[in-house]
Length: 149
Image (cartoon, rainbow, N blue to C red):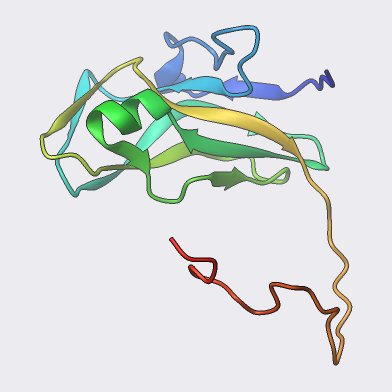
């Protein structure tokens, strides 16, 4: 398994929160913790920005993907509006989560709750080459349910 070192800075408001961490040896995502005052209520249909309390310095050639936690999504309808969110290698600001409640009841986010995951991914930079024609495939331009239900 490839490993890289990533510099991380806690925001002043998050000094008491743990650093993101892998919960099990096989985890690909590190849990992110809610840096909120005591608690925050996320009502059904509402979108709120929730701080993770950290800033990152990702090496060039890597990105951070912010993903919802599956248990929160299944049990409560809590997800991220822009999933997966992207943290570019040249971004140094706070990692914030655009959270929404797709459930039917208000959801309480308490300080220090695990609310999202951070996955570090290697990036491949594409070089686009304009063309008059594209190679043919069996699928061609079929999309949006073209293979049936």
